[in-house]
Amino acid sequence: AEQVASNEAAAARSVTNFLVQLFEAPTDGEVPGNQLTARQLLDRGARRASRDLANQPLLQGRILHTVGMAYTALGQYDEARNQLNDALAARVRTDGQVSLPVAETEVALGDAAASHGEFNAADGHYARAMTIRESLLGRDHPLVARVAFGVGALRWHQDRLDESEAAYRRALAIDERPGGDSTEVGRDLMGLAVLEVQRKRFAQAETLMKRSIDVQTRHLGPDHVDLAPALNNLGALYW
Image 1 (tube, rainbow, N blue to C red):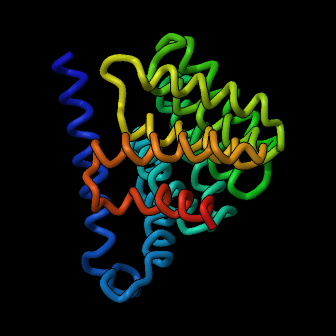
Image 2 (image 1 turned 180 degrees about the vertical axis):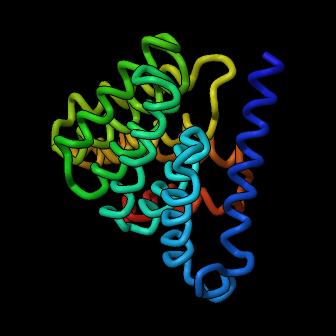
């Protein structure tokens, strides 16, 4: 266990050092990091990871996964998919097909595909992630709940509401177990609430939204920025 923790700490430091270097003195005529936009910094990180870390697939997989998720957050789906696919290939080389790092990147690919409307692709990524995590962690692990939540959101977009509810409720049942993450419980409840809005069951939606906000407020505090989306949803319901 100590060796695993030591390896994780070393890998985390390597990732941090790599990211810090993106802001340092430029090379090969590059613009200084403090003069770049977020997108330009990501582009630089992707180039350097592909070029400089080819012989370090463990670190390369972590970096490209992080860069891919950042592209997803910026709405740059094509770049996100490219970096995440490269991260997946690197992680398969170092960890094998059935491994938690591979499952992590499959989830990220699923999230990116779903956000871009590529639902069939997202389905495949989530299915592979679920198979890996269940086989390695069991059916009731919080990381399994995160895949179930993604499937719930995907099914909602596909208007397959009964399947969406089943997936959300599975995530909620796992997250509500002793030691579960209250923030994730709040997220699961909000997923169910939005589902009830789609069904035009507004009283049920209101109850679920209030539960979600109460859980998140107790966990995060009343002024936390992450409460804003939940409060916005409740306001939209009243409107």
